Image 1 (tube, rainbow, N blue to C red):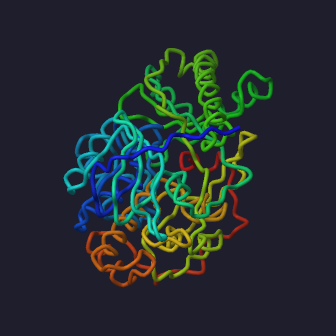
Image 2 (image 1 turned 90 degrees about the vertical axis):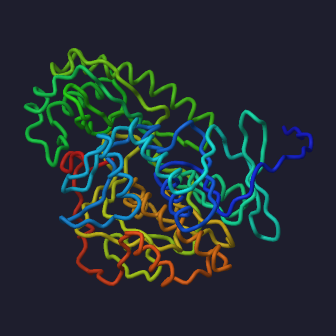
Image 3 (image 1 turned 135 degrees about the vertical axis):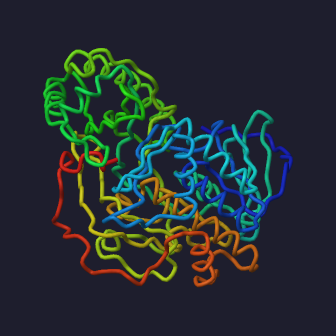
Length: 458
């Protein structure tokens, strides 16, 4: 059954060079990069703050900026971490490059980053539709307390995570038949962190390894039907004695299906209440714990992907390619979470960083639309590594810079000269060398258990 909406005239509230939809890790950096490169930039965000999964879903640490004692992500993403650290809201000295962040402080640091770059923020506004004329996207339409309003743009960057703008514009997307599960992160106070450290043993670079004692007992309770399936648990110290941040709850879902995702949100909040009571009853370290905060929303790992000019693959991760249009690097493990068990479906530790090409961010057929973040074009294993937040931030700098340079050169987004883009990124501190690739990356058979790599699995 269908109904027909009344036709309406939508007011155009402003005109911008670059419009970024979605203020998560990729969107914040994309907007700052575009603005710093001279583009009049608008960042549209549905919440009243930016930061995405790092702030709305409490995901920490932000992974990862270093591998093998070598930094592979710099530029504006690292600057944001430095800003948060200056506010006592991030730890950026960890050799692993996995940087814990305080979500509240990151909200402020990221907001300042965009505004000080000259960008414009529009909060509490949900992307509703767009207008395409002669193959070129001309306006986005948002829904907010003013009703439906439009903003004109010359270039657009989809940082929604779910390819919302790309799909609205009619470009092709794809979605796996089996999606990685969502996770509800939470922070606990009142934890005996001294005893917890004894239980877990020495932390690796500040991150607690998975306690076999705690995981074992939770597995027993899961097998007895007392608690649902879980991941990890990955338990990280959270800046103050007695405080921890926990990644434990997981559930299969499709976050692009509102009814299913609503059921997931309700279910996981019930399970959060259950798991806190279970922690108190079964582990002395948590006997007096209390819920400090849970994610404003459940953390999403994947939904839609664009069909781009290039699909980043498992082979590109394991055997890095010298892409001339490299705009970012990644180094996270290939980490694919199993939606129906307590384990990882695949976990491969990498030996070196790999390259992410601009072509993986451009939808096929696009003239002035590109993406950054987890809706890029990648196969399952490729996505299993590239989806993490530090890499998404680096993609954001590449996308924002590419949009601004395309504007100034008068070219379509897929006609941008790669050397020009590369030079601009390097001048802004981005690490985009692509000619030092080694064929000795990782043995595809080298698969670690979820317990073996502890806090690195996200």
